[in-house]
Image (cartoon, rainbow over the protein chains, first blue to last red):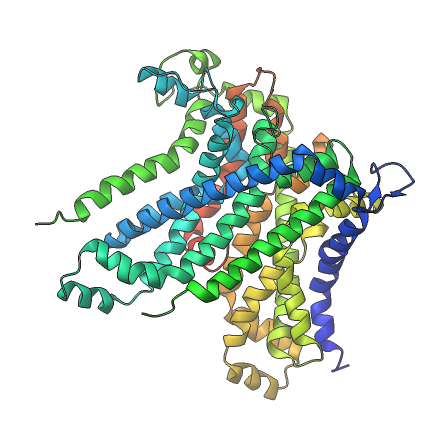
Amino acid sequence: MRAIAPYLYILPAFLPLVVFTYWPLLHTVQLSFYDWNMVSPTWHFTGVRNYTTLLTGEDFWLACWNTVLYVVGMLVFSIVLPLGLAILLARVTGPLQTVYKVILFSPAVISFAVAAITWLWIFNPIDGVLNRTLLGLGTAGPAWLNNPRWVIPAILIISAWKLLGYNLIIFAAGLAGIPGEYYDAAKVDGASAFQQFWCISWPLLTPTTFFVLVTTVIYAGQQTLIPIQILTQGGPNKASTNLVYLIFQYGFQFFETGLASALATLVFLLFTGVTLLQQRLLQRFVHYEL
Amino acid sequence: MRRDPHTWAHPVLVGACVAMVFPMLWMLVTAWKSPAEIYSSGFRPWPANPTLENFVRVMRDVPMGRFFLNSLVVAAGITLARLLTSILAAYAFARFAFWGREVLFYLFVATMLVPFQVIMIPIFLTITTFDWLNTYQGLIVPHVASGFGVFLLRQHFKTFPLDFTDAARIDGATQWQTLWKVVVPSNATAIWSLAVLFFIDAWNQYLWPLLVATERPMQTLPVGIQIFINPEGGTQWGPLMASATLAIVPSILLYVFAQRHILESAVSSGIRG
């Protein structure tokens, strides 16, 4: 009894993870070698044909490119802005700092789906508050979500708005962890505010920055499926689609289960590869002390 | 003489706060406007004649109460189940020595690397096989375990002083009693924070309910209120914003009352969706 006790404690968590994570992962790889439409009783083994269909088609590469745009765009929005605000926030003392934090973090607690709905109204080309304001200022705004050139920037604004507060408090916690003596010593030596940031804050923040980097890449790569589905369904004319949205479309709109599974397998390999690459970079560039 | 950074820290931070709050505020304001005012040109940041019309239409046109109930049942179910499975597994990993412990722990942690979008098709097929489409089980069961929860609680349980549990064992308590009478109460803060995080995460879920709850009476709030969106151009903005306002009230209330928990646990973890 003593010997099996620990396994009994683990079982309630382990069983669901096997059934709803590990088995689906293997099943995805298996399905990727078949041609199947989700309802037909027969599966046709087609070898690697789903993969060649993907790699020789346009959709996959367009989705790849857009995924890169989403990730790079989010990195600019979600590292530079929150870090800048966190540095300013560190200069504010007392209860006001908490007030700022609570307000800036608030978009992070609401549903991304509901947030997307709100922005659908703000971005409305005719009656939306954004284009009305731009019109008042004398310029006509674009049709944001219906314009192939503006649709990704628009979705990036929504995603950055949702993620900003979260990254901000991570940076704020990182800054708070840097000992004040370092700054005191730098001030005695006459270092400017920028020198203090560049020589003390930035290198000591690298573990934090790295963490933010990883979560932001995951967020940009995966969570953007929600605003894409609600606001554009990948359009106009596939302009806003990305890899995870393509899995969703192949799987649940076109019922190309095999093709969707092949794509899911590639996406899994790609994202895992990026995460592992980031781990390697972590070991090279992160400073834990000066 | 350099300018004091405090002089511009406040204006920038206040500006950022306005930018963060504005979308939610605009949703709230629109919800109280009459259709005539919504479509009239001009920019007024508050409703001229506040009206309940949109809220009345929401309650009349969609089963809003049912959506609330579904969201609540699903979020509460997922939260409780995840807490229970995480506490038990974390305790075993922190306090028992057994064969395969390290490997099993890595298997738990590694699940955090698997994006849900990659495995959603087989999960959907499994739920279909169980005949669980449009049921609470179908919405809840795939989410009852959390590699992150096990990881976080193990950290807390490991740092909990052994003296306390040893004392309990000497007094004749079993491992099971020690867990529930000593370890869990002593780590109440961490467990509460995790519970709040799980609840918000589950309350906000969109993709899985979209796939599983295809029938209106089983839909949760974020999915159900999309009925007011019409891609062809006939979106009813008033009712849509009113229903969105109602949908985020619980999240905002929870945030107001548990903001310290939420901010602290967000630092040590992550909020998704």
